[in-house]
Amino acid sequence: MQLPEVVSREQWLVARKELLEREKELVDQRDRLSADRRRLPMVEIEKPYTFEGPEGVIGLLDMFDGRRQLIVQHFMFDPNWDEGCPSCTAGSDELSDGLFEHLHSRDTSFAAISRAPLAKLEEYKAKRGWTFPWYSSFGTDFNYDFGVTFDESVTPIEINYRTREELERPENAKLHWLLQQEQPFENPGVSTFLRDGDRVFHTYFTTGRGAEWTGGSYAFLDLTALGRQEVWEEPKGRVDAARDAVPSFED
Image (cartoon, one colour):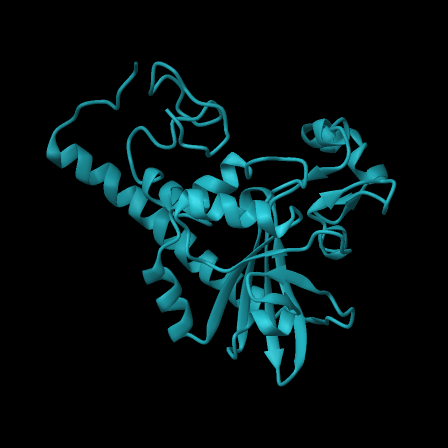
């Protein structure tokens, strides 16, 4: 294990101040990016999607619970699975009632949507002790339309807005493994929606590492000397046994 260099407090302060300037630049850049995200145009949802929840069949508009905004976690749960995706589960384990109260205070609701039947979602939700709303899109086009279930017998594959032809290009070699997955297969993601009266608009979608903030552990681990302790991180050798880049957080 190779730990950070040991230096004097004075030497540490020099290095810390240099890093602080870069952190400030990143914060400014993130604020500009967030502003541009808010400037994105939006698309009206015209298809009458329906979902099954504990209270029966509902639409997207109902998930807002009267608020202006809705954040949807596209939770990976194939209808044939008995349990939800470990990574999605890890993030959801960290979602608290306090977080939802804070979102509600800013006129924003949260819900998870999965393709598995409601009975499986309810059983898994009870097992994990979760309290957030969770709805089933089983038997609908929702997951396919929003790019979180891939099945080329249903619709052409498009991953993170790239077609199969684009994904097969050499510059996208890191994503070729996705094309080799047995179909259908699930993909994580987060969508945001805005309500204007009874009209619902899709404003944003992200997948892959864009959805890694569902919980919060990574934000804290990124502040530490050992980091996330995953194989891709630099510098190497900070831990004896680095983990794969799968945020299951299981021992």
